[in-house]
Length: 135
Image (cartoon, rainbow, N blue to C red; front, side, top):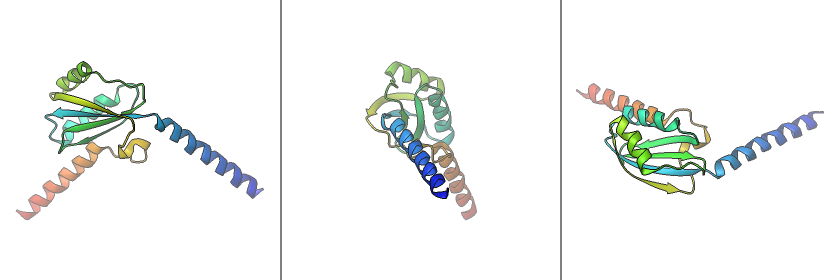
């Protein structure tokens, strides 16, 4: 009886893993260059707006380069005009977008609940606290 349960659970786990792998396999990544994104709050507002778009699965950002990475279904398409409007509403300047065939955002699989904006915000608070402690 235990072998049947173990085999069933193993089969179920394999099916779930295989299905999630297939779903993510067709995803693409867009790297969007944006001027004016200088703080974690800037990233958070942009992430929130991008995640509202159908087909978007994950959003990450690099404050140093000003690049926001977006992973989504292969049917997801961004146009220059669409991105100009979206970022203009947020107070930023859209520069360009590059499409990649695969997604490389760490939390793309959904295993990291903390967003890049939250990580950047926590890092900024730690840095500020360290500076204040030295004074």
